[in-house]
Image 1 (cartoon, rainbow, N blue to C red):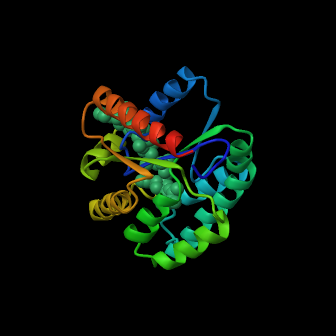
Image 2: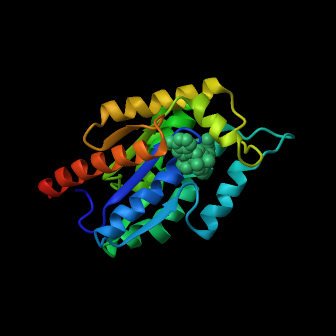
Length: 216
Ligand code: Z5A
């Protein structure tokens, strides 16, 4: 495990895949084991980072946001989030459950927007130094289904307005990350009904945590 104290767990997937819903399952699992944890999200998690999130999600038909500007805003929010919330929680021995993190940047800004991976990697090193998630849960779903789930909610944000093709690239990028980093990542089939997704997730989580604890 990279963090001597708390464990850093991230949850990822395309739009509407069920991250928020399944975080509730993870919370119950951790609470049942008496583990102290916090739940947070990206972009966001602190006052400044949530303000940057609002900017990023805002639709502005009068001017496009450049991919590079989007990338820098995401890492600005992340720097603040890491310093003010994530690192202190881990250092205090708490587990951190984060709804999206830098894998989302590789998937959305890298694969989706077509930004150079090396630019993302440079910012990752600058902002995170050595910190990486201990465990990442990737909920995998055909983006068409995810978008339908999301469209049943409020007005679409700036990302949700992207075309299906964009989300297909994002999905593939997540699967590529999972196959390149099998020790860190768990992929769960999120097309099943919610009960089946949650129970598969818990089984895989227990397996992974027992492996991580053995390595410790
Ligand atoms: N972004 C980025 O570009 N780069 C980055 O580095 C980061 C983020 C960190 C906001 O993220 C945007 O930021 C995101 C990428 C970008 N935009 N997009 N797309 P976000 O995580 O806040 O946004 P999101 O993906 O739109 O989250 P979400 O829509 O809240 O999705 P979710 O949490 O995965 O889904 P949910 O709310 O749990 O479930 C959606 C609906 O489906 C809900 O009605 C559930 O009841 C239902 N559901 C859930 N599971 C099931 C199953 N199994 N069956 C049927 N129905 C289900």
